[in-house]
Length: 189
Image (cartoon, rainbow, N blue to C red):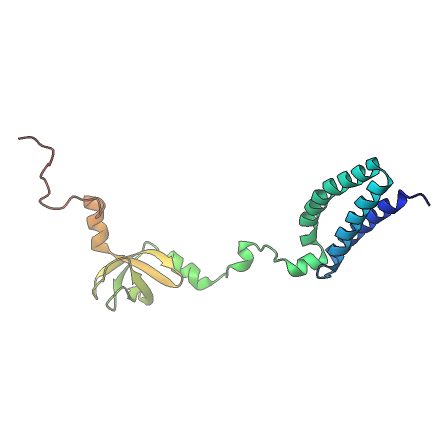
């Protein structure tokens, strides 16, 4: 048998051990054997001739990134990879389809009446039914009218109707000028 065959066989053995690592959990034993075989292949190749050693080194240097790319793309789809790696789920599979949440979302925009003091949580009555609610920002007294603004979990988020009307008439409450602040600091004279 010619001496150049041993380095090539060792390189093929290293690739074989690396491929086995994809399918079997060896806790690094097969990876160690793959690296040792590839290293021994390169050393023996250089002992035989410099051109064989360089070609084996080039195959190893280019083959490792190609193998890693293949490993990253193929491994999650095979048996061991499916057991170890988490599979991506669709949002429809993970979110519950709860009819109660659908009914609560239908209440957005409706007007109701506060039945217990909202500090900021309380009870709101809409169309004769009571719902747990959170006030958006301030405390709301019993008997005041509120509008459902959004839904957070199973809670309705409400805002007092008069706050909505005053904000709509005079602009945003935060950007409205303070009363009596008509003094212009840049006015001369």
